[in-house]
Amino acid sequence: MRSWVKAGIGAGTAFSAVGIAFVAVSLFTDISRTTWVFLDNAKGALGFGFCGLAGFLIGRRTNRADFSAAAGALGGLIAGVTVPVAMYVLAYEFVDVVRQYPFEYYDYLGSGASSVQEFLLSPSGHATVRGTSLGLVPIVGAWAVTLGAAMGYLGGRIGGRWRGTASATARPNRPLPFYVNGLV
Image (tube, rainbow, N blue to C red; front, top):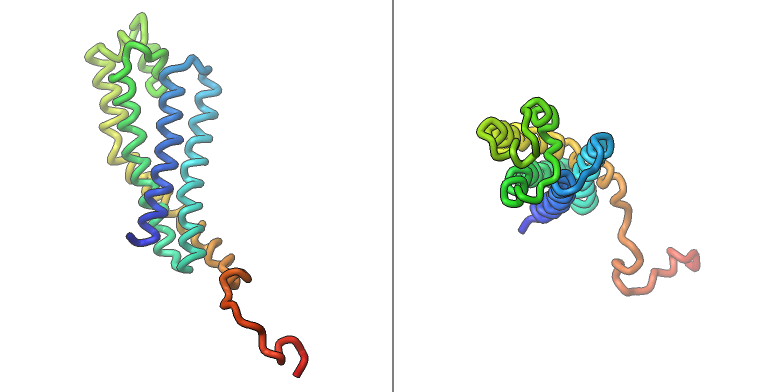
């Protein structure tokens, strides 16, 4: 498997894990709205940071910004599909233990539902949630690919500059010639 594909899968897996953890905290705890907004932004920064890291590693290895951008884009694509799907699947598979659904905060408040479960199971609530999770996968995926590629490219450019020389342990095990030591 090509190195940029491995790096992209790694970035996408890490980004997805952070995103799914965020979704779980969002659904199954009573965190405040302010904390939720902060965690949402931190999730995005950390997740796209993984795309940049993938690009950095590929940039160090290959010095090819296009492969770095591809690694970041693949990481963004994986998370851009996985996280919105997780919002829907976790909410409806564990509807009995959902404590809040902050992704549709204002829709829930305006629905008149007495509980978040009532909102999620109502026809209008279900249509709203389906539309803003599964229905937005193409848009979220495209946005995540674009931003992931940009972060991967940036990381690759930085990584390409930090290539440097091989470390002492990577050099061949042979003595240096006399002229290098100044003894000629």
